[in-house]
Length: 120
Image (tube, rainbow, N blue to C red):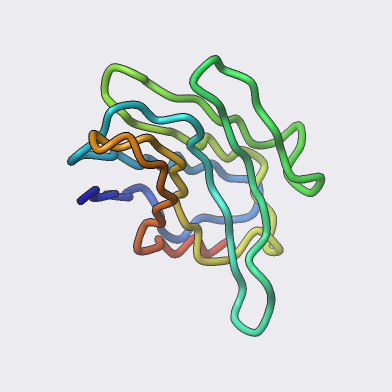
């Protein structure tokens, strides 16, 4: 089993910043991709950003230039630095991990979600 623990969500004013963290633990051999998705009630979950073990990144169009994803491979932790936040960034943010477990099988895991609210 693998556990994902997210932290860092909250309420922030427009133009402000937040940093999300997600730490993975458990039966992990290697983590191939880590990332963040977000979802607004009634809408589909959308890509925010992903990062591979080698550091290659992909960003959703709406966050390019404002958000930065990074990871600490030694700690199995992924971070999302969110700057210049806008009200439309308000959503539940979910951590995502694609990994190889100790049984050599590949799995996808999702965190429980953390609320980010951008409002004055």
